[in-house]
Length: 524
Image (cartoon, rainbow, N blue to C red; front, side, top):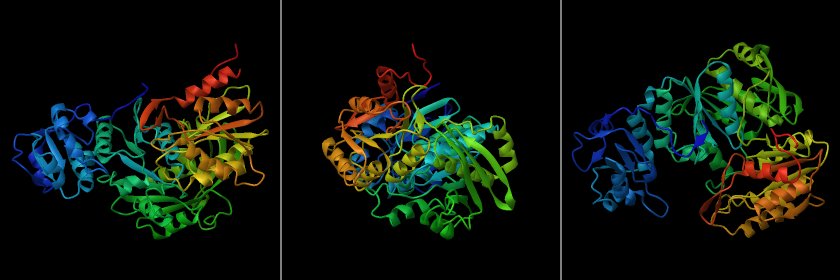
């Protein structure tokens, strides 16, 4: 079954008495709640189902309590909000439960509603700037090869077996996340793999979840629209490595931030180095060596304490993907799996059997340039991606990209610079301009690219379809094209409107038009 838009909730929700919620968590209510049963909780009116608590959360411009009447008409049985929301929704007809800070209370209340604390599974959490999605998918894949039924939540999707929904946030709001955990419990899932963003920690989306093992990839420039500095950004991620959140951790110590996290973590951590001569290489307990790279796979050896070793490959391009795989393996070891057991499970296919949507995904076929689709959207991700592609490409590298509107503007100049330094040809186009003027976004990227003396040839093509065609026209056999940013996405956001646009399908169409059958197709 393919992915659909919505949320994953228990198919057979268990009824809970609303009065018990108020009593057990010492909450305040406007009226007696005796006789009212609850089966779910949501903060989105379009997701309200019969028996739900509707959460009225204060927003930047509108208080969610304004939509309480709509929620009641959709089947909500109560409203959870703050004092301001209670006044706004005074005549909505729903009993009102009030808390001082709604977001701080949502996780604990959602866990109570869905009984997610009863989940009998190992819970993994992954944070860091880049690589979180890949680590989550690799964890899930290895667990499947070990015979462990598992579920995942990532930037791309929430998945339990063959059932999936498209993600709206990297980490869902706590109401959705606890519903997902309850659905996993219902489906006898034995392990859960969760991507945990800095915003998820700052905005309390993972409250009420006890992580068994958490992992850290690295820290680089991103989200400075939400965090004033690297220090603030780092502090948000470091919150995952506290006893209130997790039991054990694995930290990649290739940069100073990883070393700081390992030194200051309040939980026991194992350390992993994946770059020879990196700052943490000498003292890391685990080390990863890349042994071979091709456009379609990366082989590596992982060495741990007592000289334990595992050699395998991941069907993805780049040493950074081997780093992600190494982190996943060490996280599994920290959770209790034996390294030899993991090696034996992987030996059946000789590789980690993983597909990561939109991460160094080869869309092209056997003729013409190699076309990679990737979700990279930070300067650090661009640098790693360009280095990996350059390493396996004999010809020139064409880099196609845009930037998010209404997001961190401080990284745009660096994004342009890095592409001009690492690519031969750069094509700058629109991505999600949202409410910004797309021409101004492109101008910032172009300024960065043209700030590199003797850098790449730069093209500006605003229309995305035309930009894809231009990139293909500028490349030939032996060359590589990278389209960074869209990855798995199937919409563009322009002037606040969601416009259907399947990037993968558009690339496939453009390849056909150029006479290059895409992956999985043969020439006529």
